[in-house]
Length: 93
Image (cartoon, rainbow, N blue to C red; front, top):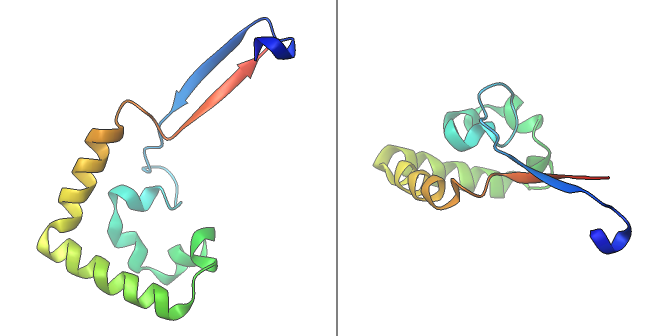
């Protein structure tokens, strides 16, 4: 960045809590949202999937939530990515 002529560059880590909005990130901690067709319709990633793929994924998710596998995977992900954040905002002057 400094080679581009900026004299000051800062970074700010952003972590999405998923508690205040209905985005795909919100479903990371509340997987039950994915079973709601309106929620999926408002989430751009689902518009790229066909109905068969969504149905298969929801069946797998239902099984994983019921068996506790989802909670185990989510906990492992959260622990591994806690320091990384979800994205970084660069401010360059």
